[in-house]
Amino acid sequence: MLLRLAYLGLTNTFALLRLLPTTDRNKDIEILVLRHQIAVLQRQLGDTKVRFSPTGRALLAALLHRLPRQTLSRLRLLMRPDTVLRWHRDLLRRRHAKASRPKRPGRPRTVRSVRVLVLRLAKENSNWG
Image 1 (cartoon, rainbow, N blue to C red):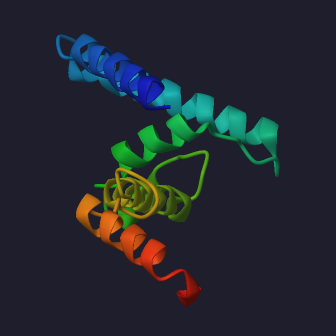
Image 2: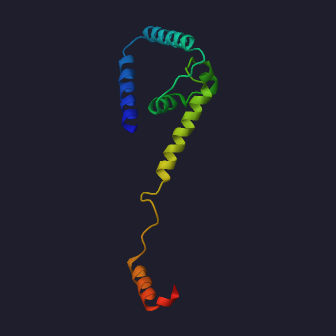
Image 3: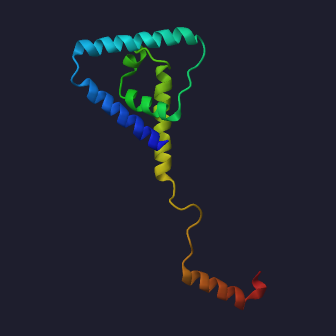
């Protein structure tokens, strides 16, 4: 998943670089075309929900989370703005959970001197249980 997210980020970076030399008029036309395509898709789908892959969710959440809620509600999206914000919260929750997870699972090893002492005590006092 991380590799795919890196790939999507790289392709979007190249798409952004491709837009730099274009004029504002061309960008506005492209935005209008994309909005129209989304409107057509929404009409065709009706009540059917659109399914996004986890990498697609992560990319959309990363791109849209900085926008204010009012701006998000004005955008023509295939999902509700609350959904995008939830995806971003989930993304951050998983990231922090992974970072705080111990590197080695289970209980840490006991110091060798303590192990030797416990085994010696167990051998010398067999009736302790």
